[in-house]
Structure formats: structure tokens, C-alpha cells
Image 1: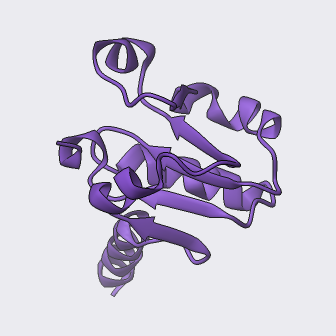
Image 2: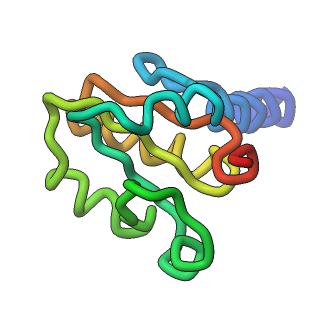
Length: 117
């Protein structure tokens, strides 16, 4: 009985890590490409500095995920924030951090740089 309950809790935690966060929009790379020229948005890449240096999208600012929680306050809460990483997992974690800090206009780029061609 205890093992069954523990298994359910572990599965629940794993599933919750991969589900989209309520209040965070999801767009694909093609949609983001259409929005790149828009004004008044904040474009954030949460990959490591070396990943960013190797390949990044013009206009994106690098704030690595390990420092993101401490630096998120530097972003404007009244502007849309777009977050990207390599696959979409770290950017979703960054979106969760933004949500907890009171940001309301958050968009995660599904598939991340892997989808950017």
C-alpha cells in the first residue's frame, strides 16, 4: 500500500514537471520568427553562456538558468517575456520562476533551439 502511494506521488511529480504551466503561453519556433521584429518584448535565452556563444538568435539576452531566479527582477513585469533554451525544458523552468515572481505575460518557445531552423 505504501509503495503504491509513493509510486503515485513520484509519477505525479514527474508529470507535473513536463506539463505546461498555467498562465504561460506556448509558441513554436515558426511563430516566434514572426514576432522577432515586434517592439516592447523581452527575449531571454536561459542556456549556458557557452551554448549561447556557440549559437544564438539575434535580439535574445542570455540569462543562464542557474542565475535566472536572482536576475529575473531586472526584467519588466509589464512587457511580454519570451524564454528559450535548447529543447524547451529549461525555458519552462524559467517560466515557472517568472510566474512565481508575479510576471503575467510569459511565453515559452516549444522545442527551443532544436526547433529553430
